[in-house]
Amino acid sequence: MTLFRQFFSAHRKGLLIWMAAGALLAISGTRSAPTFIEGNSMSALPPALLALFGDLSGLSPVDMYITILMGKGTPLIPTMYAVILALSVVTREVDRRTVEFLLSLPVQRTQVLLARLAVLTVNVTAVTATIWAVIRFDLAGLGFQGSWDHMLLLFINLWLLAMALGTVTLAASMWIDDYSVGVKLFLGIVALGFLVEYVLRGAMVSRAVRAFSPFSYVDLGGVMRHGSIPTADAIVLIAAIAAGVAVSFWAFGRKQFSA
Amino acid sequence: MPAIQVESLTRVYRNGRGIRNVNLAVNEGEVFGFLGPNGAGKTTLIRTLLGFLSPQGGRAQVLGLDIAGRSGDIRRRVGYLPSDPALYDFLNGQQNIDFALAVRGIRDRSRVKVLADRLEVDLKRRLKTLSRGNKQKVAIVTALAHDPDLLILDEPTSGLDPLVQEIFHALIREEQARGKTIFISSHVLSEVETLCDRVGVIRDGRIVTIDQVENLRKQRVKYVTAEFREAAPDLTNTAGVRDLQIHGRKVRFTFSGGIEPLIAELARRPLVDLTLTDPPLEEVFRAFYEGGGGGR
Image (cartoon, rainbow over all chains, first blue to last red; front, side, top):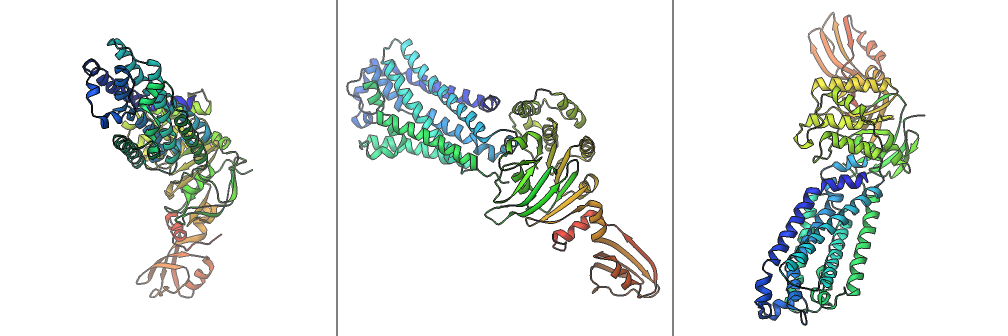
């Protein structure tokens, strides 16, 4: 518990900033909802633009708006936060040499990693839940009725994506000792992956071709319409989390901390 | 039982640096100095003993516990002060120490206050606002706060002003008087000369010599001044003589090796005066660092 508290308190300020950023992004979206939903402007959008958000056919205007809102960049907030947090688990400690202090204490490396994975999970959940809560309750407050259960599943899907990227980054970070290089590299990969995914979606490239992109495992329109996360997507994301965690423990246990 | 027992310990990095076949025994209750130039392998040995690095060969025990399987238990009983220590700068000194003590399961904070008062450090200030010297003081308190059986100190007084160094030296002597073992890695030879009972010298990852500080100083190097009744002889080619200066009938030089052949050589001329003095340890270890020391 001491290890959890220490790592959590180190990231308390960062957590509040990311929650605030997510909330602001969500509010900026929900506040323009009346214009889009009541003005029926979404149906006037070109097909290529609508394709960015998946298959929107059959969705109610509110659900369509939620889907578009979710696709506009919302997934980047929890995923980027997960990546940054993952890099601070070991890489930042090595970069700032505090790892020497930490590992001079009578703790097992597995205990350290377990506590920090717990913080990663709690914080990513908090950021994702904040965005969900703002969209859910602000839209309801504005008098709109959406498929809230479906929206919750969409956020669970998004949370799985963030956790998958976070744990895979954590695993890869065991071989990176420079924090700023790690942040640039992994945020670059996430941002580029997001951009490429949306360019390919706009070009209506098939799912199979986009399989390399992590963002293709959040089928925005599909989840909102069917009210379920596609089993294949869930399996891939959970497998990525499991692999990321397993590799992290394996690599951290063997990591050599030279000067 | 030695507090530290190292047998053929090897840990070599890809660049070829590290430690090779290091053998070392530090007795319980002694202050052991570990000397060597930068990159000689001092920190590598410490990191291997504490489990930051895995040995590639050999074995070692700390406080009777094998480093391979009992690393956590070893760290529970060891106080470690790294060179240029880095604590968490989002916390203040007290919070850093509290974290370390909480992980160790220690509730008693009485020793922290005593140490902080002795070192005159304000533990309420955030680490990022402290000078290097004050950060070093916080790190010293952190290393000593849990009353460890063994202290491993890597360049402990770097960043401390001379007055605080004196306080630190007094703390070390008190810890030794309480039966604690202290392992000091340093290149501040005057510090080693003042504090240590024995000293080990490492060069290029290998132990060059281990001996009592006093013995090393005596056996290896002397400052020699000799005055002759006539012109001083040229001793340039005499074995063990270096830094030779001739001023008329007087000659000054640094000598390393057995003293008897030198006396015999000097006595071949009418000698008026002869003075042999112990040089500072710097001179002793320069011979080892430069490759002139006896291997072991």
